[in-house]
Length: 264
Figure (cartoon, rainbow, N blue to C red):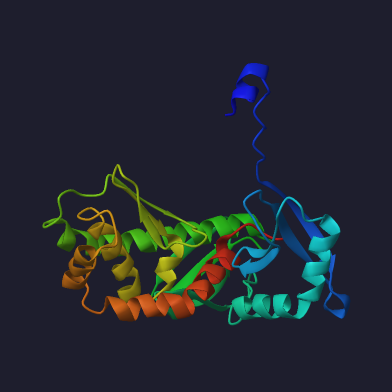
């Protein structure tokens, strides 16, 4: 702070915060698309991105709303191609229409039964959903998410004991949730978070992420010593990392498509 400002009592500028809203952009014959518009004081240029949550337009403070919309229109073909790529191979879940859902790197047969109450049962290599004739979409999404979490915790329960013996401590807790970019994280206090979409991946890939986060209990960094610990427990970790780089966005999109909030 300058001496003049100190003596004059000039107030410190108020820090500007990130603001978000959703805009609907018409893309000609392709129809309309909802775009999350984010005005970020840290942004230096207009940026358009697409992930499993949808399209995102980032604007610096100096950019006008009109400039942002023009930017989306100018990149409309790219935007639609990215959205189509993320949605490729993700069949919509239709109540009382038999199909399949992803689980552990494969497609699990899905069967429907009519019943008074919503219930999911995994039996004989297939998932059976019992539901009323006109089931609540949000309830099905919640039930499917609970099913995936139960399956993921079952996998963790089988894998975790073999790694804990030579670790300095166990994680204080393990939570499963939808994560935007990461596959896992370990807080300083030992709380571990894992992406629920891992249960859709081949088991070897899921187990690699678990090993990765457990090794952060030994080294809270990505030093050579950390990777040595990972390799001692997961010799083929590079193959699993390559899998996430090539297929990770598809997995996250699939889970959000099946279990995320309904888009209306």
